[in-house]
Image 1 (spheres, rainbow over the protein chains, first blue to last red):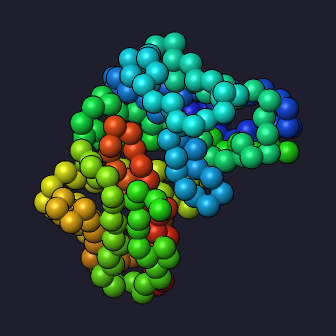
Image 2: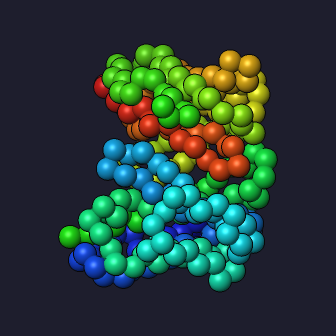
Image 3: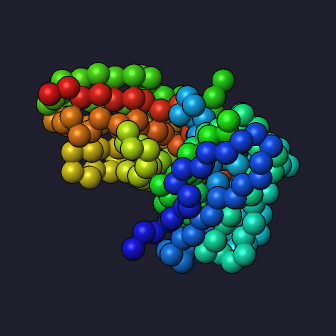
Length: 114
Length: 106
């Protein structure tokens, strides 16, 4: 009964490839997020979607394209992978994006670009 | 300068010690969060605060909105408390501190 799930857990790929990470939440939340955690363990928001609509897009290269087919899913597609994309990517969800809302995190996807 | 500053960056304690981790922020917020990240990598929400104090087991979190400061306390620390503790603030989106790596030795 995982609340927020991500697949795959590990992803090793070559520079220049295109890859996707999937995220699903079964909490009935309206808002989903993608975060990147770099090698120094610093977390930064990448994207936020509310009811399938993009509401936050931080300064992220346009090689990263989120897609939300429905409010329970937020997938992250990355084109032309670069070495600097190596990181752990966390998906999260919250009840809504306004006000104070607890966030529930997925287990993370460790992406290694060789 | 990061909008969310945590101290200390690293903390080593003996089992049973009282632990305090501090967080200061420079933006207006709707809530402050304390998160725990274990060596396995998963992130768990410990507390969400907008005022006052919350307690859960051996963990206590306080916030002073006027001073823009929060503390996370762990009483009777245990080796299983070893983790990275992350302070984050809600300000339309989440802004994170750099984390405090806590190691509790038996």
